[in-house]
Length: 248
Image (cartoon, rainbow, N blue to C red):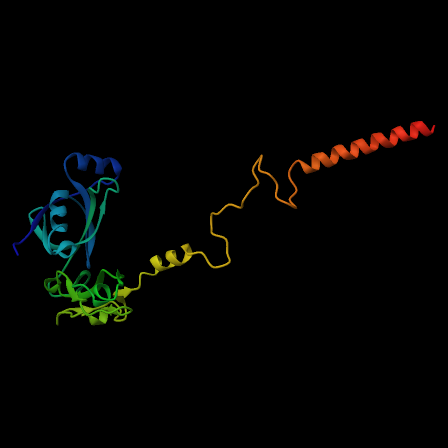
């Protein structure tokens, strides 16, 4: 791999206004950290850093920062992007020593179609997509690959199943699940919930209502019945009053 050199400028001022002026010049703020050095504020080109992030080695790419005529071997420590447009707005770097191991995260690439998916109708669920390892800077693997073709329903591939290069030490727990094949439970639960149970009313069904003008069946009391009963009582009252008058 060709040696990568990124030009960087020292920053003596900080703050939002300074950062805004940097971006107007096509630069972004950054900070260089080191094990036995003070943090150094820098300004770098976002295009060059973005190009490194998009390379095969991505965040684990080793490259040189050229500052005032001297070079420092670094790796990306952290970076920030603008949430809407995704533009790089800040980058932090960590100076490494080629003879001392460092801790980095490495991406896991899953290959093959599991038997549990192809034959048994399950779903492949990705749980862990990267692991943490320790190694010398020059020995950082681009990725760790695992074939899941033989993975059956209900089975899982764990970190302990990964094949790690001899010069790399795994730091993530061996029992950490990377992928597993699960039954499509969500679809089954929806189907069961949608099926009506014998003797129960179907969800969403409305009770039958006697509509206006519908003739009452034998034994039914219609909405007009209370009114008719009221009229009968009033007539009875008037009849009683008339009888009392005649007696007088």
